[in-house]
Amino acid sequence: MDKHEFTLDDLKRILIEGAGAEESVDLDGDILDEDFEHLGYESLALLETGGRIEREYGIVLDDDVLTESNTPRALIDAVNSQLGETASAA
Amino acid sequence: MTAVVVTGLGVTAPNGLGVQDYWEATLAGKSGIGRITRFDPAQYPARLAGEIPGFVAEEHLPSRLLPQTDRMTRLALVAADWALEDAGIRPRDLPEFGMGVVTASSSGGFEFGQGELQALWSRGSQYVSAYQSFAWFYAVNSGQISIRHGMKGPSSVVVSDQAGGLDAVAQARRQIRKGTGLVVSGAVDASICPWGWVAQLAAQGLTTSDEPSRAYLPFDEAADGYVPGEGGALLVMESEETARSRGARIYGEVAGYAATFDPKPGSGRPPALRRAIELALDDAGVAADAVDVVFADAAADPELDRIEAAALTAVFGPAAVPVTAPKTMTGRLYSGAAPLDLAAAFLAIRDGVIPPTVHVSPSPEHNLDLVTDRPREARIRTALVVARGHGGFNSAAVVRALS
Image (cartoon, rainbow over all chains, first blue to last red):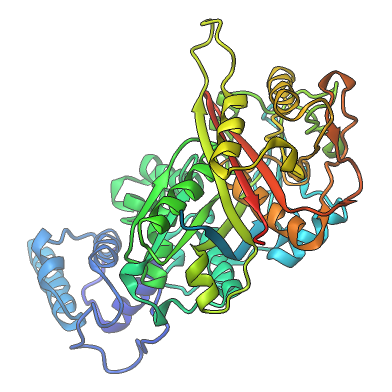
């Protein structure tokens, strides 16, 4: 799939598809800088999310992207930077 | 030694969701066996199963759990919720290291695994769920129940086919005697999906009948195999002291247990089921004539039926104790079968009634007092539950009312 920007809405959709949503957490709130763990997503949920992003956007995320991106903002930035590299390489 | 009691029951069975539905259906002789609906069974030699109808996981569980759970785990989580509720337990109010979970499993999460294998071969490894890492696993029901309720005490899984349902409860009893305050124990199995089905077919023993009322006929001359089912039961177990101190309603005590293993085929030595029953009675400190009802393993294989009937008549005398197999209404639930029989035994004690064995005309050869067609009223204080697993596992448990 040829997409060049990855947004918070994309991330929320993929999180919910792959791992569901914690009942006590409002994903529509201000979550950009919340820790994934506070949002109810442990490492396996992030692994699943990363896999879904990779296959949907046709990119490969470095192993440490998922372990080091603790917040939605960090993960979105990492994905967009990867998308940018893929686009400029093409 | 500390008496270990059961204070909560949670049931998911083909003929009833929840204790009350299951028990009403069971006393009414209502069977949950029918032609498989979860996939098209036409091309398979066995086509009947005990499926649980009307279970909608989304109505019971948060969305966070759905992408990571097989059907058996969803059923187990709901059964555990119900058992805790029935026991009047709020896990958040109790010390987390004082609560454990010990379940049995016979196959793990086949349906989930089938979906991920299909994704692997049809679309590639990128499409396999990260949750496959544990969703298929034997121990996953124990793990998920433990996580959901914050139970960090001793937790484990036992894998010994159908006997495992009793082996798990016995392990739970050991942990309580060693000081764990509360253990959720029992088992739920569910693998009525094409991959699970071929595995069950490979193990042999399934009936090829297409007529639900003539399909699973233990102790009948027409016995020609069993019908598999899905479901089981979870039990809340505590020491008698703990249960009494919090004023809990007590179903009864897990008073005795034993497990044996059959000798190697061709060894000439006798099957070990009788020994398991005798040892369980010894463990409970009860004489054979104190047992008011036996919940049979009821394999519906002519040779296995003969072995079970011979063990029962050797221990109790010919037709000397009422025997029943309410699993004729659910099919054999693998590890879930014996915990469901334990639940039925406690309900039989509570209500003074033995649930029936349906559709069976007992062969006179077996010399059993099989309770058929209709429930039988009786004062029940002590019950024996028998469970055998494929490959030689024999387990027996004695439950009784507290005086």
